[in-house]
Length: 179
Image (cartoon, helix red, strand yellow):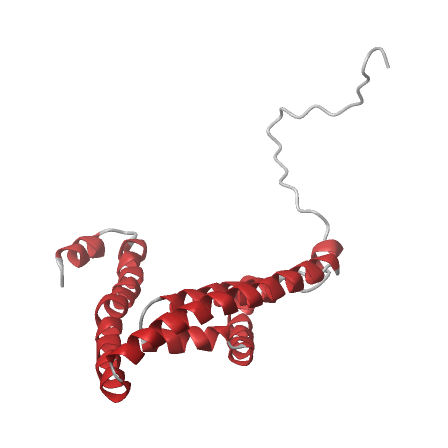
């Protein structure tokens, strides 16, 4: 038990005080992956691929994947932008197009980072088939959390107003002089 745990148990807002640990542990794991695990994987792959095809070809392959990433990101990004505009003009929210755009940006950025593991992740997000599967799974998992209202429910309910009877309300008609 740490110092903060012992103080929080005596405090009546214990769950609010300890929520930083849950968020912090996820961020710590993400930082551990990005700054330690990912470079170790990339260095290992550089050594193995460099030994198999040679150092010159390995470096050339890194530059080629970066150039291909920029090209694919530009081309697919424009296609997704057109898709978002078409969805918006049809009156539909461009939620899937925005998700595709974010994944294209992430995939292109991963292809720009030197390394073969990040290139594989970047290609995963740039390839339309895997991107469609990923977006479908993420939207299916997240949308029920954010959308709790059924269609047309907002239009069928009367507006909820807060009424207070504090004695300061004056009812009556008014008229603007000069009109």
